[in-house]
Length: 88
Image 1 (tube, rainbow, N blue to C red):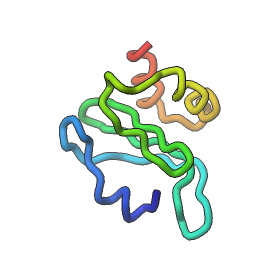
Image 2: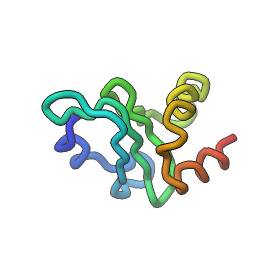
Image 3: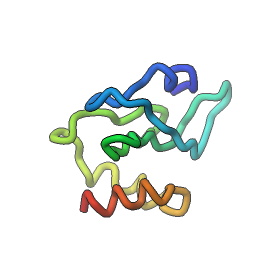
């Protein structure tokens, strides 16, 4: 996912402007892993292998996303960690 693509995104649930934490990038400024957050509804959207996971909550599988959150736990913002605690 490129930074210019991120600039076009909004939260699919409340249409709010999103924030991003970039963990790894590939050549040409392609975001490989990172975390998109919605400051309004507090939803977290991981970017895994360049793909933002922004599907409805009912279709998300926590077990598939769990390794991502464990891997990047030390880089997560306090807000993101608080959202994860609320989801458990």
